[in-house]
Length: 523
Image (tube, rainbow, N blue to C red; front, side):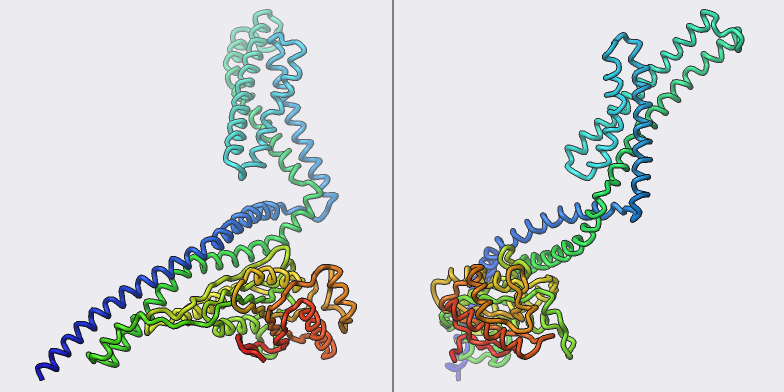
């Protein structure tokens, strides 16, 4: 009995030590996996941030253009612009006249007029410039403000000089006796002497007011350009599109940034939960405790390969069925379920099918699944990675909407072929969730009642739209028949079957459904 107790104590101590080592090893594995994910996400996160910065600048410009609410009556617009320009010219001319009266007595001769013109339009120019550029670069704003302040100060100083000149004229007139018949004597002289300062102040304030009015009026007149009417309408239409793309990118950036931390939390939660369940189930059993010594055993997964998934983001898949779910939502659900079938070591790329799939590739997600199940008995790294990838794809897909007006399927195939060409080992699989009705400029498969397969294929080869997909297994799912006859759908299937045959690919499935695919299965 004593010997059994000693053995149990020794086993308990060994088990505790093994458990501590297992927890430490699990933490190290988790930290390495998190570091790997952060490294993989860094480049994509940088691209997202750069794109966000560019869209933010574009949004600011569109908001500024959208604020220019112009009247629909162009004749009224012409009258208003003429009225504002007349006010600006009138006040500017008054400023030039005042400037000439100021500097003419200084004997500058012919230089007095051009100098007066420059001085008279300086302040209106800077007012217009400040109002136009106040929200632009900080240096330009500073220069404009300094120019405005110095111009107004100069105008006020010239007004003081004009007051002094007027005072000089008045004193000369009083001294020569040319004001006879008006207020005479000491009282009249006292009146003019006391009102000179008030007159000088008035002229200074009047000059500042005229210069500001000229600048503001000219700025308002320039904003009422006739050709800006169409630009305002275009800006109003483009602004929601830019804001929607910014929202999608923000969600993608947050997912990329928080993904490694979410993985770490899920990893440690599952590990400790499995550990707790094992201890609760087996108590202080020597066999269970010594079992922790076997945690370093690894499981070899399947041969890794590359899988590219294309999800249609165009308006043609926005049609809702009797279950009130759109074809896009069904495609997204199918793509999420597909992730669970991926073998260990698979490199997954999810790209969007848009109106410019080739010229502006839209990569939604890239992930590399672990090649082994890991050293932990109660935690499967491959399964955990697939769960996390499916969650990220689901969240990202829900934040997007099928908003593109045209469908560029051929462009998506060319991008997918370039991605799969980089795979040097394992299988190459292409999965498309789309109605496959290409409607981008160059080749329209959506409008015909029935597709003339030989003629369309000849046009495909002339336009260099045949993607090199040699050795690639292709699964086409979610090919809905919304708004089309059965004859059209059959001709569409015949066309794509022949297209993939000529491209060197192996078409495994072409189906309306989304659950006909089991990766790795060979039929």
